[in-house]
Length: 108
View 1: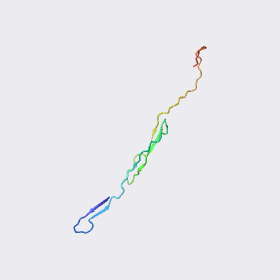
View 2: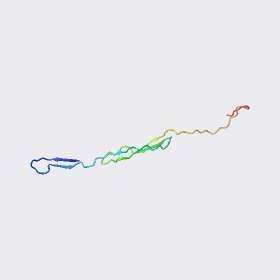
View 3: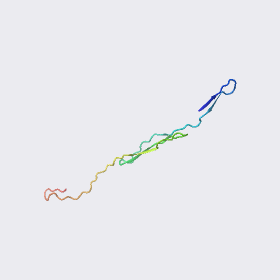
View 4: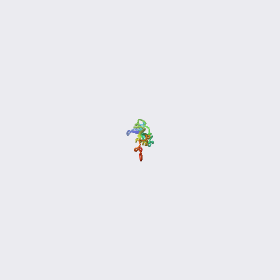
């Protein structure tokens, strides 16, 4: 900026005003985050995975400005539902005794 001053006189010669620079120090610059990236793909399709995203500083704090608040990366759980389990039969047991001694008996 500038500051000025004046003086008055009806009989003096010379400069009636002066200007000088002031507050020449740089202004504070606050940090600014960029936008978050899109979430990454989940690391698992079921049973619990993790996904993440990040952001970068668009403007770095300078001259006493405020630092960026918060983290530059974050992650969260995803696809936490249980994984489907395929049906599996156990081995066959031995045949039971026949239900009749002759005719149309059935084994179970």
